[in-house]
Image (tube, rainbow, N blue to C red; front, side, top):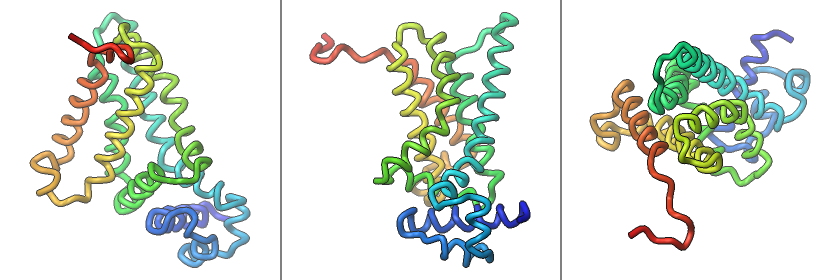
Length: 216
């Protein structure tokens, strides 16, 4: 079984899962679009669930690797005495996603459509599998942000990182909207910068008051 066969299966599955959802897509549909037999899917992936996981790993893992490389570079600069701030860390998280989607071409739009489906997926196991892909990144970015935001608890930083993931996914999914909806920020670099500034401000905001306590 060739690498080309595996890529065809991944692309076919990505498109069908994006268009119809996981439950409504059959392995036979995937094999028909990919031009392979069922044995090829079983050989490379074993099951439909494992195939979906591989689709996400195929796209998300390289993005996360680039995020960690950028964070490594920032931490190396900090070790040499160079000042880094929250905006630098946010940019290290956001930029690789935009670069990757641009590099994916037409398949990038399909993948982001699939990401949108995963955020509303009712199958909890699939949602957990998807979110697990971000665990290695969270384990590095949360401590990095806490060091820059010492007034925030680990839980607070974790939630704010989730908010950043949500806003990033929403913007990437919505890049196909008409410019009248996106406004003048429809251009790539302006959109990236707006998202970086928005999440930098959100991360650096004062922690909310304790439950049941109103601010004066």
